[in-house]
Length: 455
Picture 1 (cartoon, rainbow, N blue to C red):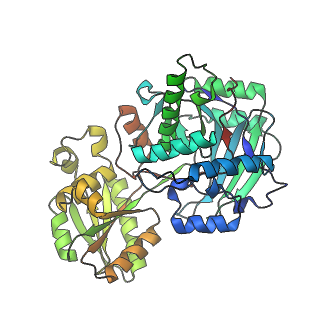
Picture 2 (tube, rainbow, N blue to C red; picture 1 turned 30 degrees about the vertical axis):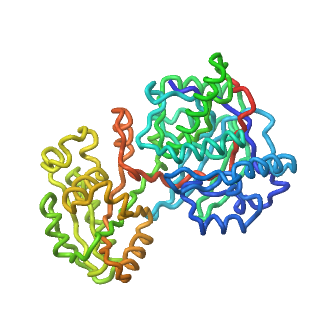
Picture 3 (cartoon, helix red, strand yellow; picture 1 turned 135 degrees about the vertical axis):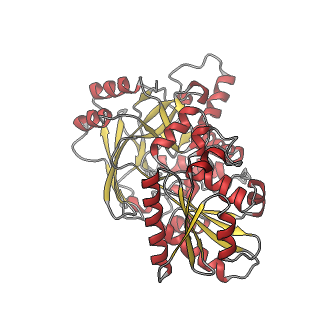
């Protein structure tokens, strides 16, 4: 189903850039303003100056920043800070990292071009909604610079890991680059140019759909770019560069593939005690208080009991922490909640069992009475993947008496199988349902939109 093909990537020239750590960046949409400034100060050739940050769902004003990025991109190529590989390749991309559990894992994937397909075709399958403002911003950047700076992260099924094994047998002896990110994760890239290996991989993908894990806006942006190209030329050749997008692909059976939860810090718009909170939640879920001495041990025990409850029952389990009173509760959803709760009866069955849906619709929407519109308009919810940062933020907000009561809702991670089930059904998960970890870096490989695609 999916059409994959090698390409000639632009990369940082090691003769010009001694430390890749100073120029590569996380994905544009998770970089804060403060972190963006720190990245700029590291090195003037930082990718932050090309793949411009945008953490808003709204459209960004064009103040000349897209043309400035284009001028920098052109200058960096003229200066040979960025150089292009001579041969088309598929790139093996391995990340050695430490999981929050403490385990050391390695996730293996590939970087290549993938043929664009409308979602209705079922070849590339999404699980999240996109926002028009973000797509407009990314489209202006891509078309002005005539390049794709960052990759879409997608997954595919390959129980025997045939794709990776085929490419590993044909990879070059040494990696073309190796870099350690800010979280001490090691990223390594190898080129594969062997024609037989590339052909076999292309054949393996002809029967596979791919599922977007991270980068829905990047993919939808490329679709819009292709629609414009087709409008200008209805006879657009199949090998035209606008028909393809740069992707990182990882097998969903890869032992190093990890999904982390994204916790919710809810700001109740008045004062609420922990007892009142527990009583509100008991209307729809089972509530059990957890006791420990310190804040950190209290949250650790909450996570332990959440995991045990989910494993033993196969049903959603949550934690909620009231920082103002340093009290935590385990919340477990009985089966009736998934089948009979008024907040879920109109939801497709594939969504009812998702922890993020139960949290959003039942706990926040029904028990607390906070609508999606109210939460968005009042900015009542923050999304935090790091539990330590979530705890610290919740505690600090509880000290500031601004009329709100911070409540930290803790989640178990969404399962990869659930992502595939939702995507296969054509449904969409709530915002921030998945956090595939670690993030793939921006700046390892760049794709220019100036070459026909080799098949």
